[in-house]
Image 1: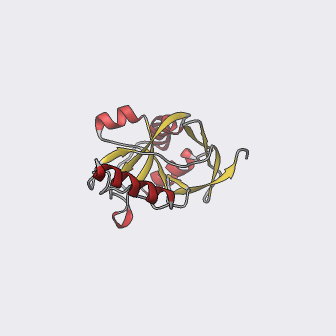
Image 2: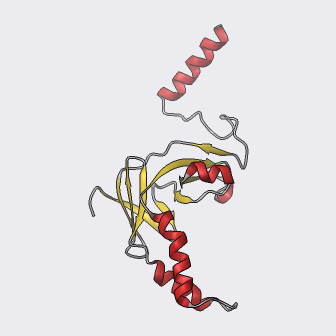
Image 3: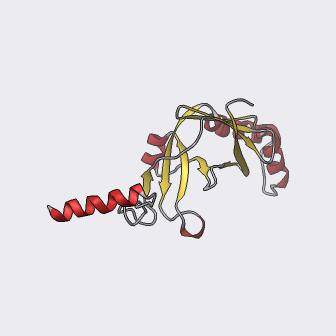
Length: 163
């Protein structure tokens, strides 16, 4: 009993002084594990550093707005040297895939243990979590250490509750 009280006291002191006691090793997670997690994101709008698109987050829901699917897919189609379908069909296929992914959806913050750069944890705001976890194929929005969000080659920075 004294050991439990001593351990609780040490954890209380570390928490009180602001030290973090949770890490991949501490929570039993191993490299490659997929773990639901918490993130500290503000509701509102996150603007792109690269184009006119933006992310809207509110109450556990997320959407990517203003992303130029047609323009990006036109570039991709022009760069492809393999036999390909018509440009119109290429763009239609891309819209069929991307528009549902970018639509207003619930997200689940997930940590991929030591799967990011330099063996750091990778955090994604996963859309359609139940479907993704049943397939082992996750898609979503990467949460960067500085509080920005990345998706489709863009970095989105919080700008406030209105744009």
